[in-house]
Image (cartoon, rainbow, N blue to C red):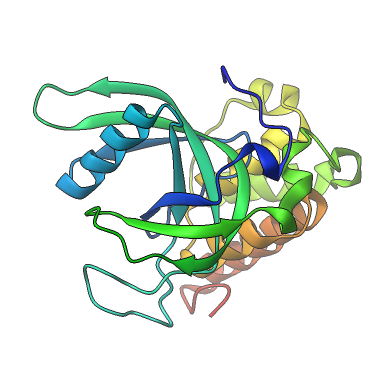
Length: 223
C-alpha cells in the first residue's frame, strides 16, 4: 500500500461498512469485490473522493436478521484500503481491498448516506498492525496436512510450491479467506485472538468438514 498504518491512531473512528455474508478480510489479505449496488457504488465514490480510501468489511449476523436492507451486524469486522479499482464499462466497479486491521463496532450512526457508517474501535486489535506477529507459534505441519486432506477429499489441486514458500501469516490468512465455510466459521476465524489460534481453528474446522463429507453430510462445523 502507498500508506503505512502504524496503530489505531492512524485510522478514523468512523468508517463506512459493507455488510457481506461469507466475505472475510484479514490484515494484509487481499479481497476482490464486484460492486454493483448503487449504495455501494456511492460508498466507493465517497471513499475515493475523501482520499481516505477505507471500507469496513463486516458480516450480517444471522442471529439478528433485522430487515433485508438493514440486517443486524456482527460486532467485529476488518477495515481495508482500496488498493485497486477498475471500471467495468457497465456501471460496476471491480475493486480490491487490502486488509489493515480488525475493528469492533461501538455504535451505528444515523447518517444521510445510502450506505451504513459506524463508530468503531481498533484498540482490541493492536497486534494487527505488526506484520507476521506470532508466526513462529503456528503449527504449519498440521495446517498443511489438513489442507492436503481437504484438497484430496474434494479432488482439488493447488500450487504446492507457492504454498510451501508462503510465510505463515500469509498462508494462514489466505487459506482462511478462501475457505468455503459458512458465516459462523468465517466469523470465528476473523475473531481468533492470534495467528496460532486462527490456524488451529482452521485445521479443526477443516477436519470436521472432511469428516462430514466422509460420513455423507451433517450440520456445519460451528452450528
